Image (tube, rainbow, N blue to C red; front, top):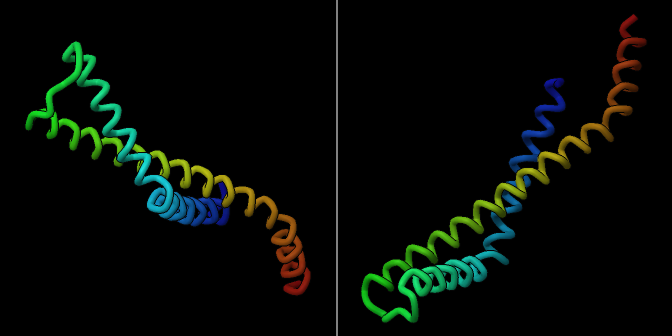
Length: 112
């Protein structure tokens, strides 16, 4: 790949990752809390074979599960944003390609 294309894709990737992080901060924190804690409680109840008592160990595991849920939703949001940004950077470079070719032609003609 050309340097210009790589540069466009890198800029798009960074912008997409930032946008994914912002979207997670706006829309992803609450689902991360919910799914992380609910999944932990469901997993613990299946492992215990019934309802679990709210002891200190269960509470600690629910906190760890909640943090894991937050981390997973953040990772997915940032990675999806980076992938979409990379794709948009590539598309923007392809759209810009004909204009770039005309500029190179004009520079070659004027330099002769």
